[in-house]
Image (tube, rainbow, N blue to C red; front, side):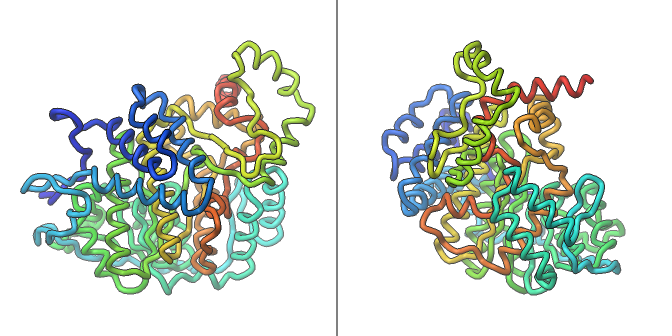
Length: 488
């Protein structure tokens, strides 16, 4: 039987309100740096619709100094850990208390290691539009992305460095813990291709594990799999593999602490709706616990591009240049802005802003998703300041299953190229992100003066930071163009 479950706190009576939690955590994160903003968040009456302004304010309040941003991040994490609950057979406890009691021996996890006999790839190659780019072809594509504003120059530089040092791809000196090992954006496929060792954590779903096992047997890497100890001799490994982070948190923690070698904990989990925030809270608690027990543990995160970020002055300048260039959209800009009362095709930044605020939050994704992703940014900022090796990368807009099943987002992505935004296929994105992870493990990113500078380093935002228009002011038009293209 599951030993515990991570749940939202009771806000009134028996109701466990996600909106009440979101308001409280965001307010607590704002309080050290923006007391007025904290009060506004606490008293927001329409959180599900108007959360956007408060998440933007979190970024703006952290621009004054690195200490301000890190203090806000630490306050937000502390608030979440104090508020979220773990249900056990004995009642409810705080999130951190989940690890105070030993797991039920009947839930103990055992390890099965699966290795392949395929070749180990020691050359970086990137699948892109039906080809595999390597060598000069890869270099030309990186140059093209930088010129078009699709990735930051530091992203291209990091990928070039990995390509020039193929021995870096050998990650046999670390154990990459892939939380959400089957995720489309995760590095599992690439790391196994490069001969690495992946400690895989994902839900007990046989079809998911069959795919992971097939990948592991095809390449030269090794996959460590959690299996219920009582069932490790089952004939069909996929039927008994997996662990549930929401309900087996202490059990998974004990299992990971038993893995030899230095750990790199990568957060690639995703779930639909409010469950996503619950599982991200569980992952953050697990991350904190592992770092407390094994301080040399490194962390890895992929940030969504549909969030609020501070963009460097160079990005602002390119966006401004695009805004001034003659185009069909520029011709239509005046009438569209007039008809929409200024909502459509707003300028992305004030001229010469440094940094500028690129607000790419998408209302349809909701406040629970926004808070789940913000937790990861907070953890990255705090852990790096504490001396941890942290790979935090903004990933490009990607046609993942979770995106394309949302009709509005799918249509907007289809129409995005009209605004200079490139939407990637999952195979391109996850290989690119895996290469950036390798770079950061071999060249640990330093603590910078500002947290926003740490987040901008190596960003592959798909062009959102360097487009001429504020992303949300172009979303509706992009969706219309995308729907039109689909009909044609």
